[in-house]
Length: 79
Image (cartoon, rainbow, N blue to C red; front, side, top):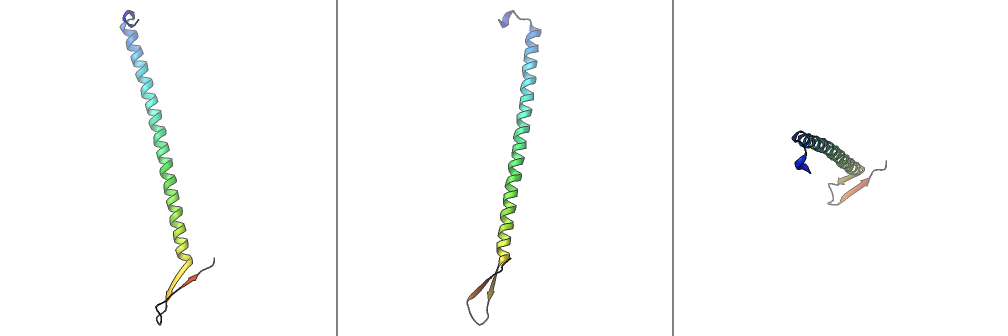
């Protein structure tokens, strides 16, 4: 079937399929890059939330060491 087609038509088909492949590859690469950016932003957001929670927990608790004793006294601050 391809043997009786003119060479110009074969070149046109190769050009068309190659262009379509490049376009599909660009779309896939853009989508993957966008998804990667979204995932990184989500991870950074979770890390910031965890750090804020840890800082808030550390601020709620105060540890005192009395000089006359070796015992620790921990005071819970209420918000």
